[in-house]
Amino acid sequence: MSQPQKIRVMIVDDSTVIRRLLTQTLAEDPSVDVVGTAPNGKIALAKLSTLKPDVITLDIEMPEMDGLQTLTELRKVDKKLPVIMFSTLTQRGAEGTLDALERGANDYVGKPANVGSVTEAMSRVRGEMIPKLKALCPKFSMHSSSQLAAAQSNSPSNNSAQSEPAITVRPRGPRHRIDILAIGVSTGGPNALSTVLPALPADFPIPIVIVQHMPPIFTKHLADRLNQKCEIEVAEAKVGDPLLPGHAWIAPGDFHMVTDVSGTSAEIGIHQGAQENSCRPAVDVLFRSVAKAYGRHSLACVLTGMGSDGLEGCKLIAEAGGQIITQDRETSVVWGMPAAVANAGLANQILPLDQVSSELTRHAMNGRNRRQLVSEGAF
Image (cartoon, rainbow, N blue to C red; front, side, top):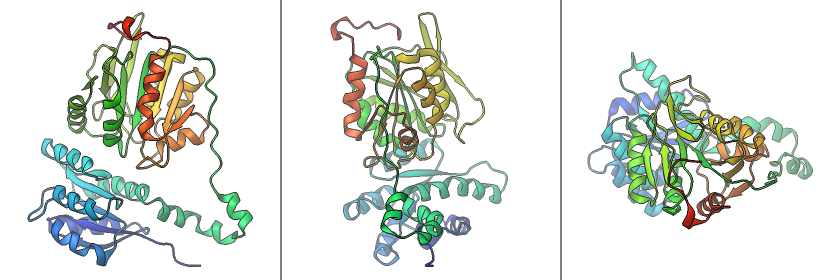
């Protein structure tokens, strides 16, 4: 039996200490092989053809050629090589990371700060970085876990049987008025949201609540950037924000977001309950509250992201008679969250990213006259 392939990683960071510690941390995982390092983007680009990495981890602030310049040059010659930014969780780091995501980075991991020891710091990095490396290179992690089964059965019929099962789309059932749109997204989310939200009309008739897996500071910068691009209003959510049509709220980093509805009043709730799916904010927390408050008048949309956050919430929305749209595999950076929902047979539609906005608008406008839309509250 041949040895399973490892994920070839190149580390690009101007700090000798960071390069050494990150190399040691990643090397602890048997599926990862750190094939080389570079102190800046210029040297990294020169090493690409020799090292042939499957993934690059990239610092932002470096001499000679920084991370943003490196990304720009990299994407001229290779548009698909996965890049994970390794950046500081600061105001400046947030801006730089969002710039990097716009230029083609696939994901990011924050450099730990204010932790008790180097061991604890690198443990946190390992906990975040390794799953993202595997999510961005699924063929390697899948090869390792399924190698024995594949070797035991290599006939054409058995290979066919081992292929992924066909996905069943859930029938739409009776059409009901939609009163809220809830979106869950993770890896690849900022760019996905930058595609979906700006395409929504200014008179979008219902409120939008969004969970994007991001740390504090980052969510505020993301909301501000999206607000500049959109016809609707986009903001980081605060406790008590009224749920108004034509407005979108992004859950703040490290806080869960819920919808609080009483009578005809609907507003945002924020809390710091326990993490769910290792996340805070978590999509499941939001979707549960939406299913409870809006029932069959709910519309959920699950976009690109690793893991399965949102699956349990979608079950409740489906049981309540709400509608669910997921992004398809081909246009997702990581087809994890939408795949979990689609594979469970919960999605009413599975769409490429460029078709999502028009379908969200069609659902929201169903049964409504643009000229008669009210502008107060969600009901």
